Length: 211
Image 1 (cartoon, rainbow, N blue to C red):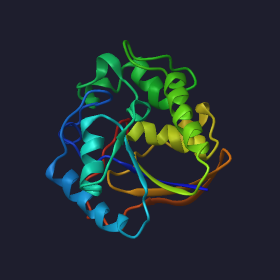
Image 2: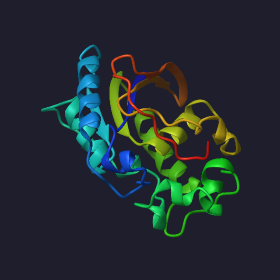
Image 3: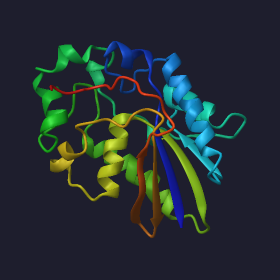
């Protein structure tokens, strides 16, 4: 049995500024650091033996704060979805762009933002990562630090939600530092706990779509 402990990176400068990140990056804010440190205290109750992170700075910094002085494996397959030419732009400027609207509201018709990734490409690399974990023979407790859209796609795999129904999952993005726990056995998933955030202080939420 494999147990996955999944979190999204903490609040970043671009999050606070309302900018789209993707493969673009920005550092954690004071709030993001505080939330990662709060999660660190919670994770002391779990027997984590492997730690994976997206190689993007904000996720890796989060993992380092949660598990100081531990070995952390950076995996390219855990990067956020690439939003190509829109990375770094203010979300408020993108809401009326046809391809940005399709990304969130009509995922079954979405191709890609120019120079970005398609859903199929992100699913492929995430499935590759999960298949690798499924091949582990002994019990493992694995922590994973990832990103907002990647979390949505991961949850669609775990909950067996087809791409045309991603809108049932992407209306809210998991708060940075919240914790989801999933068991994995022979490619079968069981959601044990979802978005635990009682260890976090109240803070503002982030929206990537129209209200």
